[in-house]
Image (cartoon, rainbow, N blue to C red):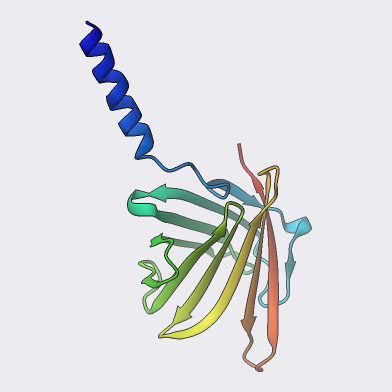
Length: 155
């Protein structure tokens, strides 16, 4: 009996050591339009963002929006958090490079056909309830523009 209990403790410890702690940005987030600012594109009517861990240190990103013109849009991809370009399955020709800065900050660089189209800095508040994503891009006129999307954590 003691051997069985000891074996269970060893197996549980091994399983726990193989798990990574959840990052502060993991979870479901609802776009707070009242706190957001859109200069690079028209503001969507609504948005939900889900970030969940995937095997090998990757992250599953799911972004659902109702765009300004009422069109439903969904972007979903699994991206390693390694700073390298990885194809976005739902957007042919687009890659994301995701880099973890620290427990509360990550950077996402989007490219289309190898050209950077936007860079997004995401910061989660210290209480873990708010996520602010600042996306910088260059518009058709060559001017740098930014969107600041504020999300509230959904429970």
